[in-house]
Length: 251
Length: 159
Image (cartoon, rainbow over all chains, first blue to last red; front, side, top):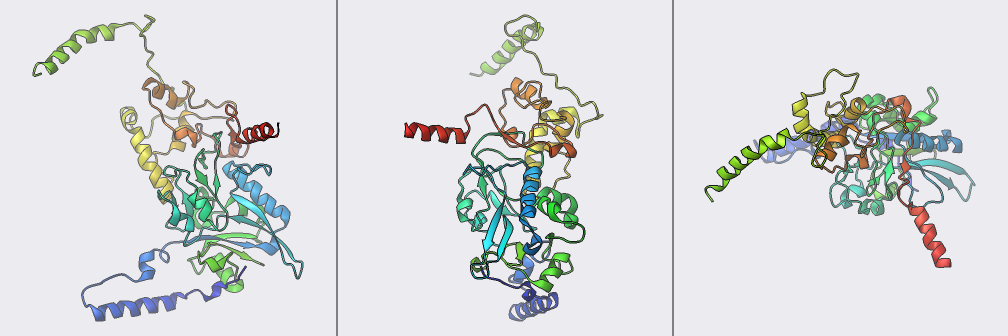
């Protein structure tokens, strides 16, 4: 598991300089004709928010991670029976141990809301998609249940619904024959914006200490960006280059 | 061929009064027109009733993409909003289920022979926030569970 620090992210002043230089270069080459806009401006990534989570594994006990899982189950109405290989699992408890030091870690694993999500690239119907604010979702109206995305996901974050369900919750429509995963509590984010607190974070955060911190990774003034700049964090399987929006501290 | 259409119209005009005059209580052929209950706590719907009757499916179809793709959840054409008014429920037990003709949507859909799959995923009743945590979706007990099926297969294999 490799580690990568976020403090090396491009500073706004530097980015503005590079964009300005690129624009100048385009003007010099073809005056009056703008061939293309600079990458940062056209990707949409720098203009709006990109929601993410920062999970401090040092502040999470095993009971805390259990509380995360249960909070997610209550919020979205899924359940997982350990005997069943087919039950849904939006968020799971992962044990890590270091063979040399004997250090034990337990962490919550959910959809990592990648910037370059493999699940989106393999989806044949466009049902698996990334919102403008970086949240990776399944549009169940177009999902045909082929499960390519489940194969593509390096984090094993998605589940398939095998059976007819009833008593679904209004905030979380779920039905047989479609794939589902963590939505980053998108219904709360659409309601509260940057002040939103996902259910898993709500279950473990006590007062000012935030073991799971939700925020805007694109906003350099946000608490999550400040903490990332100060302390750094690990992207799980950073070698794959998918740039997950969920970062872990203390690994 | 040129006379076919006027003929049909005349034929219909001749028969229509007979159809319209047929009493509902005559047994065979009587059709009960659905009269869906109006919500007690709201004075009007999001659009006039005649527009809602004709266009509600288009409103919902348009709105669902705005919600899923763009996160627009304040639209007045929200399915959750429909259920909050038209089929509020105190809990899972007291809820009226979709295929039940008493359900606000089902009455007309059964009458018009329309099959929808909205409620295979979506909640078919409105719930206030505080009641959500008490409910968890359950497997439809009317069907053989996949786990049971697997166990039966395994047992059959052993025997």
